[in-house]
Length: 256
Length: 368
Picture (cartoon, one colour):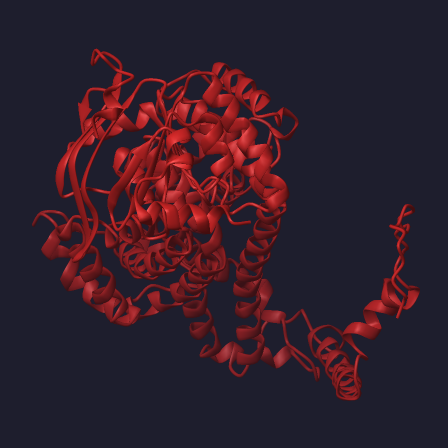
């Protein structure tokens, strides 16, 4: 497990540190003794069968899920029940959801400016300028004044990415960002994510897009039954999986 | 069946307009009135019934009616006798409000429109300033109606007629929405005390008829007030009507809140919005939009319930009507009187209903 420290001889740029994380839903032990650290700029792809706890894990990072045991430190702040820390962490951590979760009653640009204006207190004109910059970056500036319901799934997800980026986060969490998309739209979202990865963003991505994982991930984590079964570089992970469960999983998803 | 061809289509087919018989007036008639045998029969029966009813109503209300006379004995016609309106309209509108001061009520009523309209629609010139006017309006209206600042004081027991229905109804409507929102949020609160209080209030108030609340307001409200404070009976009615309507409102809005997918809460949380901001900016705008039919339904119910003030000795328009039909001069004109009163309520309630439909359509257009 010491492999994760390779990129990080000094502890300077560590942005997420998870130690001995345990979580239960009722009596169901969903995360079991998870330890993981992520350095600034690192891209981690998390995969595994459904119900393995991968989404729950990244949702713990911005405290959408409360953990019962262990420590999670994000950007130097430990996540406890303390609302101040939670709000501070959420300002620095962007999240993209499987179902986009755009605000349907607000236009695209209002979706993007809402958090900068109300959370960061950015003046409206400046927030709009910023929003247009990021909408440009996800290649849909022309949709700025439409409502989410008027856009395709791929466009909505790109807006969701732009919306998160408008908060200028240090870390981006992606919870199966392409799972709800029509096949023809997956690429446009992945392109944006690759672009974002190239810009040096720290990313935790839950996905089954193994092509994307091979292209951008520094580390791939394979989870099963609430634990990290295997963690490795993409080359090692695909060419030389160590556990039988990983081999089975890869054979299932790569077989066609 | 086409035989499979090895060539792909290179020329796509052009879109064509639909067949004539399915669009326009003919299409509409066919689709809505004559789509089947039973529908056609229903249409013909309806046309027949309307052809009997409408001429009869028009005849009674207008053609064979009489509008002049001093008592019912002057009415010698088959149709309606509207002669009393000339004498009694003032009472129906203003109750026992002194005739020389009624202009104040009229001004308060006229000012109501610039106070209300900036909240009902968008794109009014000077909307922001008008909204400040709305905030000041309750004070302005109170001074105009009750007096003070150089205006002759009019005790509230002189208030009556439709003016009283409007005062109680509008106050109840304006107050019950925010109180209902707070109760709905309170009912979903994570803090047990707030949740229990909200549930207790909603269930207690909803479980009792409004008429009972009005009766006990004489006894109940003084318990919560300092001993030397006495509440005007109209204020008491407004408090009770508001409490009653807000309990219903809370449940209507709770339904709206439950219709919001959890992803909306999560997205708001993930952006770092705190509870109040995410409610105000994300959740409530959507929940209230979903709840519009229920909210307006509650408003309409509330407005009609204002007639219950009669049980604590206030004379609203229905109270005045009751008094008039037992007056020897106009005895026996109850149909005319109650039709007249019903027309007032219908005008207000139907306007609210149309407004809500217009609002729903406008909000729906935004999303597609």
